[in-house]
Figure 1 (cartoon, rainbow, N blue to C red):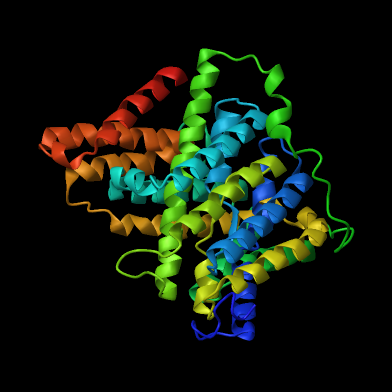
Figure 2 (cartoon, rainbow, N blue to C red):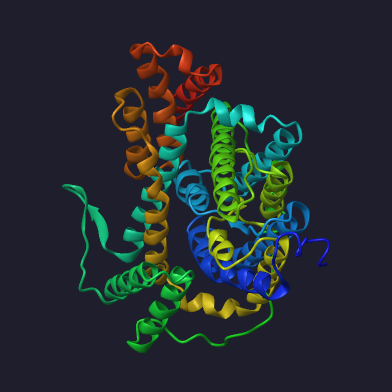
Length: 436
């Protein structure tokens, strides 16, 4: 084990790697409760999604640790689960089983393009400004959902949205949770989001808003309601040109967001750990293969796209340098599956602060956009703005990909636009055509 993970060469040990694995788990454990809450809005069985989330995270993280040997954990991605539930299932009115099939297909495509080594070509074709804008837009979209779930933002006939009733007890609990989580994050606690959820749930129980769970530990919930559902209903679907067009956009969006989210996360965490040499990431192909495999496996189990988590940086900060840290994190996800009764206390008002804080973290990529250049600022701005305003991640991406070639062409910077961007321009025009 020592030789396999190269403890001596990387100047680490079992104790340090174990601590790093625990730290990473605590920093991202919130996904075990937030993901089922979001996918339940799409009509999925919450307990089954809880189990699928934990198993997908464990398998993906284990593959990353043993194959790529990086201290990077994986789990169903924030933003992608929101796109799955609110844009695809609720917005496009696509059955969640078919949407899950789209997740599976995107994972298979990811495996193919990774094995063929064409990842770099696609990444280089998309301008950095649009990548950063997509990440920030997803962050705003997630935060907007959190504000709605908390009751801080509500619908209004005159202004579309308005401030909710802050004196409503559940909303007060959500506000309390947001303050607590913000304080913990500002103080530098690595598991601040997770601890914030625990404190918020306890506060809800104390004031009588949330009922006590009937148990703490029980057998792992069944996967039966979601396992293999991505394939079982394909034969009974009435296929049409519009549905095929929607499925194509679904797959492309899943692929796009996961593609660049993973690449950015891998590079950021690996750079923090000192693995990046000459602007290149060793074993990048194996790391991406772990991610793409986890997406397909997760879809079979019954959860949205599984991807690398930036919270892995917490484990790296704690000293993690090898895949053994990821193995420890994977083991903790398996252990956590026996605590499903706690789902009852993790209500929308408990998870709302987590969504808002994660949104803040994702929106930080706005600083990387050159706002002084209008030809890139406009597409980036429309990408960011359209996601929460249209309640659709795909629409935000479409706005950016349509306006970018236009503004660059008018500016006379046609040489800076990759041919793939022109292809995507027509793809997303077709997307709006199918929506209409």
